[in-house]
Image 1 (cartoon, rainbow, N blue to C red):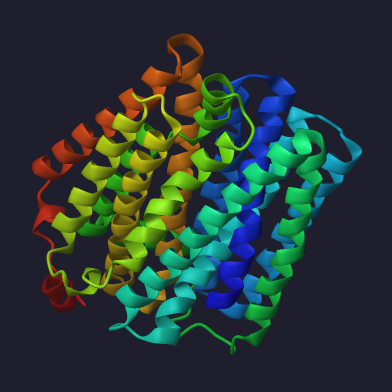
Image 2: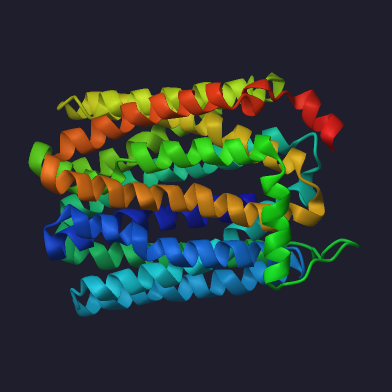
Length: 396
C-alpha cells in the first residue's frame, strides 16, 4: 500500500497543478480557481462522513477498490476534455466534484487500514513514512508539471499531465489488490445516518480530538495560498515553470521535515507540539506572501511545509491512538472532511480576497491571522495544550 500510494500520488500531483492552471487559462480569474475548492467541498463533506461509516461496516479492501475505480474514471474524464479542448469551467468543476467524492471515500478507508496493518506502537513512524513519501511525490509532481507546461505550453501540457496521472494510478490498484481482506471487527457498524451520528457524537465528547480538528481548520482556511499560485506566477515571474516551484515548495519542506523526523515519536506532549507547528505554519506562510523573490518564497513555504508535516503526523497519530477501531472509519471520514475540506475553503477565501484586495493581502494576511487565531484557541481551551501521549493510553 505504501508503494502504491507513493507512485499514484505523484500522478495525482500533476493533476492537482494542471486543473487550476487550466481553469486560470480558461477564465483569467483567481476566483474561478478558488471555486474549484467549493466544487469539491460538498461531495467531500457528504461522502467523507458516509464513506467513513461504510469503512466501519464492510471489508475495507473492497471499499478501497471501488472508490479507487471511481477516482480513476474521473481522471480519465479530465484527460478526455483536455484532448478535445472543451475549455468549459463548468465541466472542470463537475469532474473535480466526482474526483473529490471518490477521494472522500478512499482516503478515510485507507487511513483506517493502517492501524490494522502496523499496530499501535508503530503508528507515528508509519504516518511519518507515509507523509514523507507523499511529500516527496508532491515535490517532484509539481516541478514536473511546471517543466511540462514550460516546455509544451498549457494546451499541449494538460493532456500529458492528466495522462501520466491516469497511468500511474494503475499502481494503486495493484497495491490494493495485494492487501489481505480487512473485514470489520466484532462490533460492526451500520452504513446509515445513525452510524455517522454516533461517530460525530463520540467526537463531540472528546475535546482533544475536537480541538485538533479545529486548529487544523483554522490553519487551512486562513493560510492556504495555493489558489493564488497561478496568478502570482503569471504576474510576478512571467508564468512558465514558476508555478511548479510554488506548488512544490510546501511539499519540499514536508519532505525535509519527514527525513529529519526521528524525534517525532519521542515527544510525549503532542498537543503542545501540534500547536507550535500550526503557529509556525501560519507565520511562515504570512512572511512568504510579503516577498517577491521566487527563491525566498520557496524557502519560506518550505519552512511552512515542514511545520505542516509535524502537525499532520501528530493529528493523525492522536486520532489513531485515541479512538477505538470500531470508530476509526467514521472518525477518519470526519478527519478527511476537515483536512481536505479546509484547504478548499481556503482556496475560496484566497481567490475571493485577491479580486478586491490583491494577492499580497490575501496571501500574507491569511497566514498571520491563522497563527494568531490558532494560538488564541489553544490558550482559551487548554485540553489540547495539556494533552500527553500517556493520557491517551489511560483514555484507551
